[in-house]
Amino acid sequence: MTLMSRAERKARRQEEREAKERQKEEERRLKEEEKQRQLAERAERKAAKRARGRRARRAERKAAGVAEREAKERQKEEERRLREEEKERKEAERAERKAAKKARGRRARRAEKKAQRIADREAKERQKEEEQRLREEEKDRELAERAAEKERKEAERAERKAARAGRRRRARKSGAGASEGRRDGEPERLDPDVVARIRHYGMTPEERHADEAAQEPPPAEPGDH
Image (tube, rainbow, N blue to C red; front, top):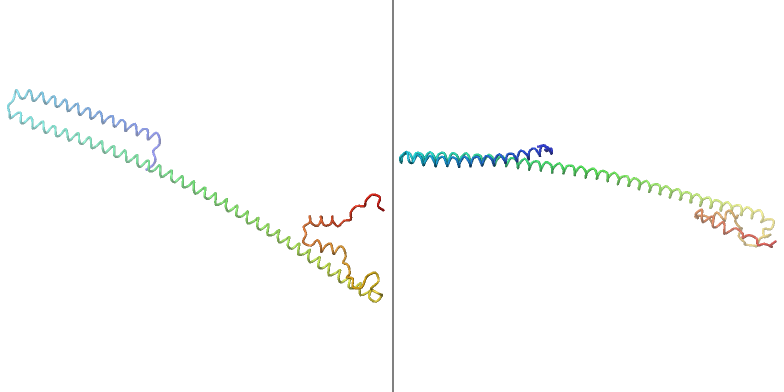
């Protein structure tokens, strides 16, 4: 059953009010007719009582009883018809309210589903962004580890190279008196650049700059020669 529009509901209420008015008018009319009938019957009985005998009065009472029963039957039929109309009206209003409630429930469920879909999409977007951020962090970490490993290997390679160069120099000097300019048993000094690279291994750029600044000689005091 489709929902009624506001105009239709208003027209239906107007029609129901008019039906009730008609019912009241009909009941008043029936009461008035009954009253008039009773008055007429009373007048007829009164006149007949004077004009006719006992047998005529019995026949009139029988006819009056039949007429009264028929009037009551008509009244009952009218009341039954009005009750049926009222019942149909209430059932139609109940069905209309039920359909309106069902329609509101469907709208609410659609709104909830739409909101849930939006929330799911946003959650997926946040998950993707978090996964991308973690991948970027992992990539940066791997790059930093590779750079540190490369620097470590270069420092070790430079240290081995310096050690080999020292051994060659000692071998060349051993025949001509290697003790000159160096005490016996003194280890050969590494190149300052190699020492600096070894010391800087694993430091951040800021820590390297701070270490280099600390290694620079202090400025000469005025008057020093």
